[in-house]
Amino acid sequence: MSKRINSFFQPLPSKKPKTDPEIASCPATYTHHSNYPIPIRDPPTTISNPLANFSRTTPPKAITDQPHLDILYFQPFLPPSLARDLFRFLRNELPFYRVKYTIRRGPTETSINTPRFTTVFGVDDTSMFIPDPKLDSSDDNSPTVTSSLILASSENRTPLPVSDKKYHYRPRPIPPCLDLLRQAVEASTNDGTKYNFALVNYYATGDDSISYHSDDERFLGPNPTIASISLGGKRDFLLKHKPPTTSDTNGIGNLKPLKFPLDSGDMMIMRGETQSNWLHSVPKRKGGQGTQGRINITFRRAVVPGGTNNYYRYNVGDGEMFRWREAEGRMVAVEKEG
Image (cartoon, rainbow, N blue to C red):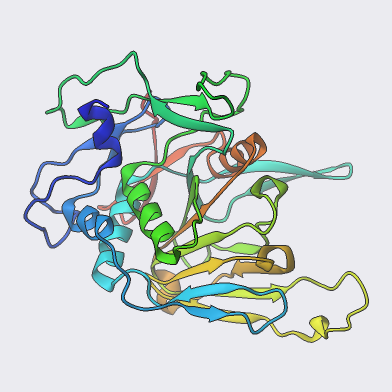
């Protein structure tokens, strides 16, 4: 494996820690993939080293006292300083989108403007990113490293290139800044769970939200596991059981909604029958920490191409790309690069 390819998966070499990754004086390096709209900065050592050597100190609370509910609640999962640095870094460096799409209910079409900023990386189980054997390492001192990973089929003993017709959007490999976090999350439960997608939501203000829904799509397989990490401002996370479809012998219709005030660094892992039977949401919030930005990262596993197409349609789409502009304190629409 070439130095260039190996560097895509490995944390940066140890350097003298900086107190704030936004103003770190050490030279920044970037990873660029042909499917990325912009080069994505590699995490500084203040983030990469703690994640690469991550060891949680607070055990999770198992929440299983409600019908069909199976949750691991880490409060927190990331220490405050790491959660703060990671929030600032991801908001500064990732490309975000305010996706618009239409849905049809019978003869009526409705236009939807996603009430938050989103972005996504990954590909389903039928494909994988592998090193391109035709490419070799070039200038290892370049501040922008072009990843030589190519999309290939994982359904054959010998991986073959994926047809251009397989996906409606061009899948992107999970960048190092999120991949290190993915590995830390996978190691936190020691149950063999693996994730191949990272969805990132940015709630700019308390007016940004996500309505009640469940992640129970068929492309996630039966009883999917979803890991959800909160960074930035505290927001309420609500859960309510789906209405019973048969005679309610267990009193499910009388269950009260559950509320969790998720703080920066907290993580919830929803497992088992949770997605099949419960809905969750992040409602609008006025005042207090609702005025602060919040990032939510969810790791999940899509098993078929339908999942890849769905995630890119509703989290990237065809609209404008946004970047965080520190001087203005807001997301600003920018031109895509290549």
